[in-house]
Image (cartoon, rainbow, N blue to C red):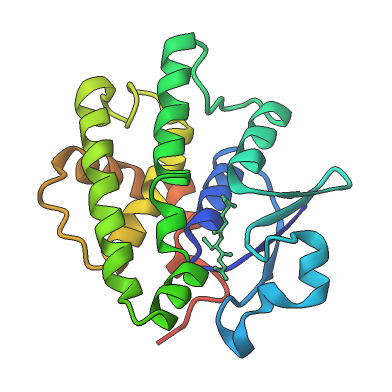
Length: 210
Ligand SMILES: N[C@@H](CCC(=O)N[C@@H](CS)C(=O)NCC(=O)O)C(=O)O
């Protein structure tokens, strides 16, 4: 298995967490998103993902893109431990939280979008910070309504796999996390978990050492 990824990419971080939770070994292939205009735009990588984005996972002779599709593939292919609840309603809630992050927050902080905003004279960083703040308000409400030890209920799920990298991004964008006590508590508990810790950006081979 090969994971094309970048240490700081939150979508890559999601997949690293799932691989670690399932105890799957993989080769770490760096796609530097900034160097020389970004290696995601190189023709060899575009063949793997025409969207010019990480992560890409090569597994079972397949080349999979889109982190949520990868997470669901891994969960079905390697069912232990399960990352989607058996209960229909809980599963829908997990998927709602996943999409809140995947469709409602992360795309609004993407490097390419921030660069476009900058070209138009705007402040991409401020835009991304505001998107994180809005999204975390919704996630905190979800945690209050249906959370427990984890974002949905008490079992670790794909909702948590998406939450932790988003909290990392929110910190990078300078979001004040004080209004989100439930999310902070869930994130702190998960960050101490060995699989989540192993997937942390600072622990990756392409993370700056100084
Ligand atoms: N929906 C995609 C989004 C992937 C994505 O946005 N990846 C970012 C890093 S987290 C990226 O490669 N950005 C490169 C760029 O914006 O040029 C997924 O979940 O995999």
